[in-house]
Length: 161
Image 1 (spheres, rainbow, N blue to C red):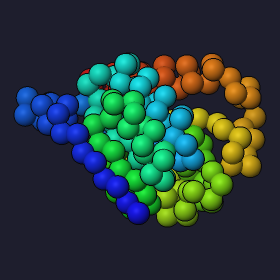
Image 2: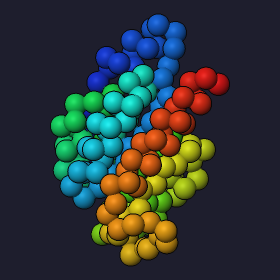
Image 3: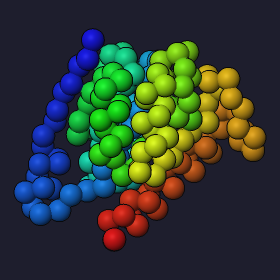
Image 4: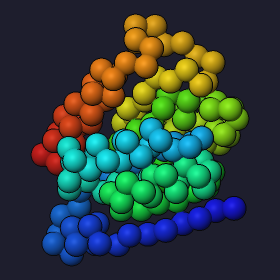
């Protein structure tokens, strides 16, 4: 089942005004709690960004929808693949770039779309994909803060180009 919802207010206003914000794609699965937090925080630090939130399942998408801050919302494999082609920055748990990660929710096609995208990737280490990332503190809030700081720097750089 694929659900696609579009909120055409922020991004259409920017396009009509002649400017388009940085296109940020947030991908999440499972319950979508991390995705929801990312949508909320990225909207705070990058109010002009065009945010697309894609869930690997409808529950994740629904949870990201509750943030009420994404410009576009979609669900499923094809939505991930299509959105990766259009994104300038991709944000999500590290498992989105690994086939069969996140309890099998990330298909090989999804992982390939993320890994081969021309977009800059900000991947947040999580322990749900049987992968340990050395140098990261388990469950550290500093990791999310670092990710938000990095995204802020990226969007400032991309809007100045």
